[in-house]
Image (cartoon, rainbow, N blue to C red; front, side):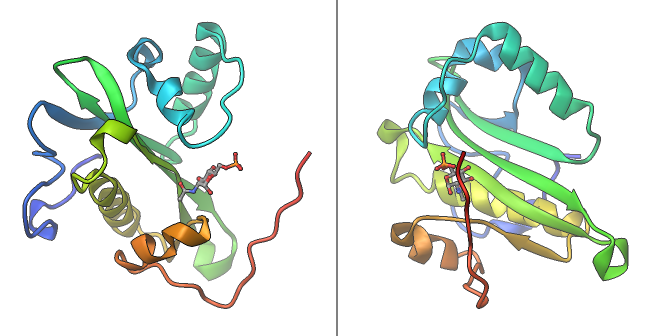
Length: 166
Ligand code: 16G
């Protein structure tokens, strides 16, 4: 269920109307050919991902019901994916077998920045997380982006984000 109440978006753009020639929708298998991975390359290293590998991962995610919500913004004129973000729902034993929502891989293509599209992606997925009943939502970001995410109710809560890389 991708529907998020329109009234939550007070001014300007909304999930239904993200802007001229733009469409907000779930990721589709065809998006491999519409620049989805190039877009992710503006966030971090994507590596070599063949069409077959993409399809396999796409289907693996799809077969985990109610877990991966990958949304994209498409420029319908150019048929290119120009923005994306993912909501991952993590099932827990704690919090009365509750769920935690994680916002991941938020990226808007360079040429499309400054149009509130990042805001739209984050607000849409945050509301979706709330609607599917997450007891909390979280994300990791660079220090430079802390101010941006604070606008949507995200705040440091005294926990360190720790990483080990392989
Ligand atoms: C950022 C992203 C995270 C992504 C990571 C990739 C957001 C809110 N955070 O932390 O989702 O997976 O960058 O960086 O979009 P990495 O390649 O160094 O893991």
